[in-house]
Length: 446
Image (cartoon, rainbow, N blue to C red; front, side):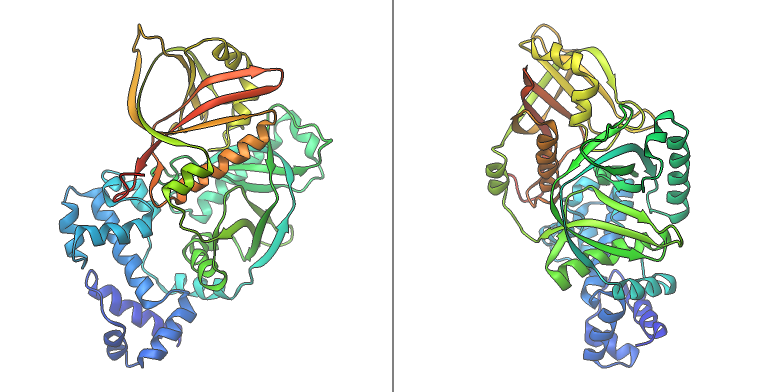
């Protein structure tokens, strides 16, 4: 099937949306056999006809939910679903949240948008499908990272390239950059607490270093545990968006895998525009809420948190790495944490939705009964953490965040995390972490 033929199939599908056509009807309109259509369309795009139609329907529906006040039931019926429940099940598989969570969330809707395939996209998808996925068993590694954020909703190549170039310039203007002369640098990709609710991507300029090398205090030390990785080499940054469209299907269909927890690494070829993307992978699983709670010795509880702000905290420039902030909190604000640990009602409030040049802005609070200068209530996942190695605990916490991002039952809600019951003694620490969560539709109980 030629590119022209595939685009003709796409045109037939797009002209009929929100109505979906059977494969037989599409084949008839395009003058193709049913079996040939299915095989060739999947071969060129990496998607089945059914997958393409479903993702386009749900993408369009997401835009309507986010940008109009129409009833979700009416939108569901318009897009060919027999009931709101059937629509919600399909939507959760597509966007990982219930439809109602996209209300007045145009950024979230744009994040999950699946655009119509045109000639340029099709050519890239066909090329990407032919690229090898190289598997590796990556050993544990230690990284020196200088963080920054890129604001690019559609991951436009020119916007991403410009932002990354500006931050490289900013980094190499710093006196401590001389310690990394001659070392190869990567762009390190992290994850945000509410990744789909904003248009920002937490990234870092990263250098792999050995245990003996001192890391400047202006940078973040990141320990990456041993893991299973894949590498794909792209011709340039203008292939990143299309890679995001097809890579999950390639991993699932060809290997029975899914994208693993960050960080992921980008390496530019010194003599070409090529980019090498190395990412972790893991087996596909569908763990229940009970499985998640058991794995992390966690519980769910609706709580009301009150407090009075005593001292604002702001992570320094270069130290915002999205969800990976525990080690920075302990290294930058040791005096504050010590003060919290000696107060019976001491707690640290971490805002998981603040962004900007000086992100992440945090807050240090106590919660005496006599004041309610700060007050909020919600459902929290209550977890306990302890140890003498902050990096090991940070990696374990990253695993929990990753599990929440993929849980069919609950997800991280925009709001405030709470650290309380903090104990610090002779290099050993223990604390309770409260993570704001919401139930996905149809998962209202354990």
